[in-house]
Length: 154
Image 1 (cartoon, rainbow, N blue to C red):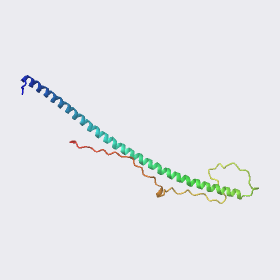
Image 2 (cartoon, rainbow, N blue to C red; image 1 turned 120 degrees about the vertical axis):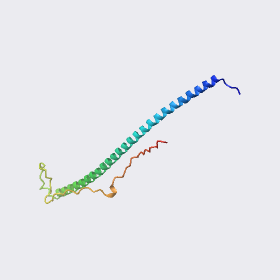
Image 3 (tube, rainbow, N blue to C red; image 1 turned 60 degrees about the vertical axis):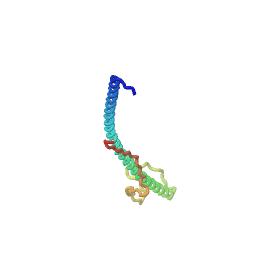
Image 4 (cartoon, rainbow, N blue to C red; image 1 turned 135 degrees about the vertical axis):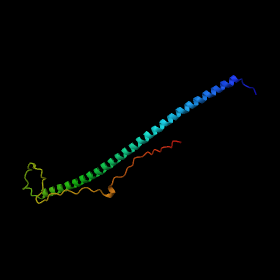
């Protein structure tokens, strides 16, 4: 085996020490980056939690709109049926009246009282809408994101 001169060994030692120092500097830089990313991870977790709460609020609002829409639709259907019944009674009363007794239509009344047939009682206000159990809106769930924080040693 041939031996290298001492100057070559010293030069190699210096190169190896320089490479070791460069590696240490790079490792310190990586450690700082990892710490910064952990801070970002906590920020992102907080933002995702806020977003989840906001989405839940939107879900509740949509359910509320669906429920109120269903009640308005049911009340409108009841009013339409009530109007059809009144229209049928008016047509029956018109057909039952003798043709000679019919006079030309008078100008509509300007009062806020609704027009009623003779002997007809004023209609009562219908009870509030109560949805049937089988007509409840279907639940809708938004996907949720679970953020799991890793321990510092991982």
